[in-house]
Amino acid sequence: MQPTHALSADASGKSCKKMKVENMKNEKLQCVSEYDRDAPTTTSIDTQDQRKDKRKKSVKSRRPASRECEAAREVRVDLQGSDLWKSFHEIGTEMIITKAGRRMFPSVRVKVHNLDPVQQYSIAMDIMPVDSMRYRYVYHSSQWMVAGNTDHSCVPPHLYVHPDSPCSGETWMRQVISFDRVKLTNNEMDDKGHIILKSMHKYRPRIHVILHSPLERLSQTLVSLPADDVYTTSFPETQFTTVTAYQNQQITKLKIDRNPFAKGFRERNG
Amino acid sequence: MQPTHALSADASGKSCKKMKVENMKNEKLQCVSEYDRDAPTTTSIDTQDQRKDKRKKSVKSRRPASRECEAAREVRVDLQGSDLWKSFHEIGTEMIITKAGRRMFPSVRVKVHNLDPVQQYSIAMDIMPVDSMRYRYVYHSSQWMVAGNTDHSCVPPHLYVHPDSPCSGETWMRQVISFDRVKLTNNEMDDKGHIILKSMHKYRPRIHVILHSPLERLSQTLVSLPADDVYTTSFPETQFTTVTAYQNQQITKLKIDRNPFAKGFRERNG
DNA sequence: TGCTTTACACCTAGGTGCCAATAT
DNA sequence: ATATTGGCACCTAGGTGTAAAGCA
Image 1 (cartoon, rainbow over the protein chains, first blue to last red):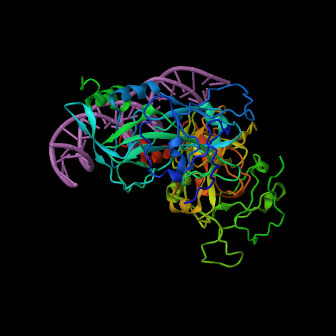
Image 2 (cartoon, chains in turn blue, brown, orange, green; image 1 turned 90 degrees about the vertical axis):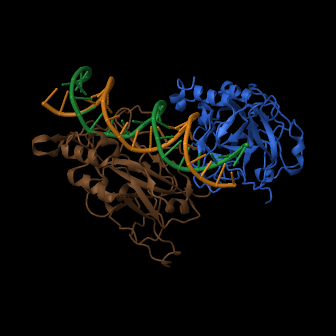
Image 3 (tube, rainbow over the protein chains, first blue to last red; image 1 turned 180 degrees about the vertical axis):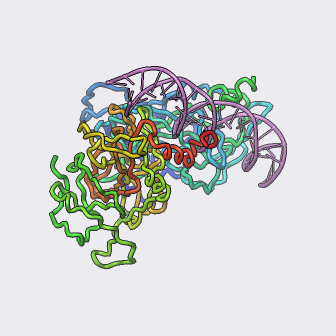
């Protein structure tokens, strides 16, 4: 359980490392509440004792050949379809989870910038709990209320490595990176590689950009912990509550309206 | 164009290397005619000058802890669905190729044995020309006849790396490795990663088991040449002739009869 | 003539929310 | 009471050979 590439403790926000190391092993099921604000959350150095130091460090915008620190620009990850996510977020996004596994809608789609074109990267997604609460939906007030604490059975979050991984920075930057084949399940015994979540809980997806050192590689089957340099980011509007059946009818309507696979319900459900 | 990992010239069939090196760059479009015999063809050392030395070296059968040479057993690759392939082969297998890309039926499916469970491997397929001839089908004799030499535009054979690559030997051995998503095309400008072939030519698929040295890795996008140790094999019954429309009606009937996607023609075409 | 392309009907495979039944 | 499950009709997405048209 010891950190593989533990960093020195200089967590000053000005550090000019192109990629910051985050040791995911040490994160356990720690909750990242009240991230639900404005800018994307970018994890900087994140060792056990510094969790309180986490601050929204807005990623530097592209600046040609900034000479600050060996001219290295910081990795940037943009969420695609942010407007759609926000439409759901305003109501309170719900995601169905089933035993067989259910896709997300909307799905997480990103573009990455400022990678080194010749380096190899893997890009991965996982889904972190937002807090340790269980929720229930109160119909008459159309609101989600806390219903108690979660039972910490605490399955470590499964890392979904994008199937194109590993791949050169150049190739990654040329395309929209889509996680639309990810499936969510409530089956704790799942063996099909789906992401296991608990119903009636709040979650938020994270994106990891994993730089492969020349001496290592990340097999797609080594599903849990990248030991290399990892750049991690997350978008507030992608937060959602897991359900086994939709609770808020406005969510149902919006899904039917926007998800092509639900077209069969368009007219029927006026 | 120089061999990356050229071997010494001891091509004696008894060499005890677990995996033999084959330098694919040196193979060019060399034709491997009259391999259409009995046992699977296993490529041993294959440098430019030794092509005549190629012999069907039937892979050693599993022998527990044979101590001959550091107790390493030789890699073995078995073709799944061999009977189905043979049904077609007896008639003269045809594969449709289209501009958009067409799947193969039957598809190539294999099982691998005697890998090192803890090593990382990639498994790949390519399709080699059997000779340099162009063929035409003569209806009244129901036979394929030579129609001339091919025009050597000679696109280097595209390597299709199995999407699960790279992966541990243990994982590979536990599953049937299916290449059913491979698509064949006659579009020489194809950019969708399909395998480009010439119509009215004879081909045979090859399977490559690529051992990753700890210091290297094979990106799925580096599509052409494995520089590591490669074990290559091929099965006579998988040979086929490329067409844009089926020539032999017996082939058409067998495809309709066996390919689930052609079910719509079962009754119609008595 | 001989080969290739295209639009097509008809499949398989699989993603939706719904609803009634069933847990918890 | 609430939450979950499984069967369902209805979609999307895409794999078939066909037949007619297009191309050398």
